Length: 469
Image 1 (spheres, one colour):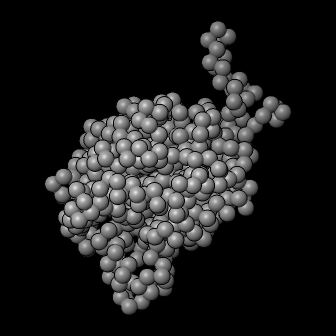
Image 2 (cartoon, one colour):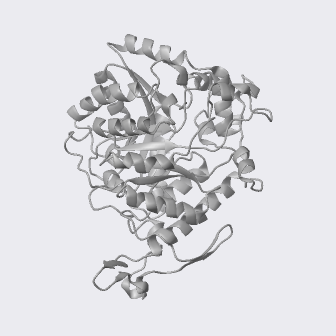
């Protein structure tokens, strides 16, 4: 296997494949209807013990990260929320994922956490304060999945004016992040905290700075109240397939969730992202990429495929249709079957629309109603599955996988028991005893000593030095 793009996208260093677990604080994940499967335990999502058990399982099983998606919205079709949304728990109900993190961090030492927060509806100051607090409580194991919410439902819930157009939402996100950097990176200098009990001086006032920002969308004047945390800025995650979304990711993101169902399209996304990042002056290896993966194991491929079909038999098509509408604002049933998906336009989330470019509506509809937003679904023995994972890494340059279970905890248990050891046997994951506690999430992703954002990132422009005083 080569040591080029597949191992850090041009960094030249061979990096282990990243493993992220994909969850939501709700009964359903992406296959609408699987909440009722007899092996499914996600109905325990309101029980903190469920999340503590999952965090321990993922850490002991070899995962790097638990990614918690979130949306405060819910599906609306034809101006109303259909009964199937409530009957099949389609984005309804969902709980706040952020509140789970401190408890899970307390029972783990290595596992990282990434949580979704919207630049459209979360004000920069309280959002930065929450993430800085979490960075302290997790000892540097927190990441922020930056989203630009497009749902009119969420706008109505928040009592806000009509949402800005797609590209303008990214302009808002860009300003939101730059103000966040000013708070997180520029509010307190390194060395500002003295905590000197003998002299009774907690902080050096000369090293604590007011932040002044007066922009198009946000205004902030005063001191940031959280002292510097291990990473300062949380690790920045993003998923955006549109032109504007890719440009935003290349400017700000450290980890990008990609959409892809074949190696060729995935390889082009990886190439494009790294080329854009380079144009923004960011060094090779500044971005890491993840693609969705689901795995069903069996005695052989035929047995594994039979198990997959059994899982998929629980999907409720009307619930899946409502789920797609919730994410995109597009009703799959209202699209002409013979049309190309290239004709679909939306001001909603475009990532799930872009994935079906070049396909007929009928094909895309059938695929989503069957698989939901899963990307690569691999079946077979552990050896066969790892063969395909290794091939994807080699062919595309992607850095790792965002693992989407069918049932919890069963899908994770079999992946950790069978797939992770095979990855380790082939040198694609470090040995079980090599993942030392005490590293920040950014160091897990980019290497020892890389706890903070590098100097070529836009956040670095907000830092103070001794010569500034």
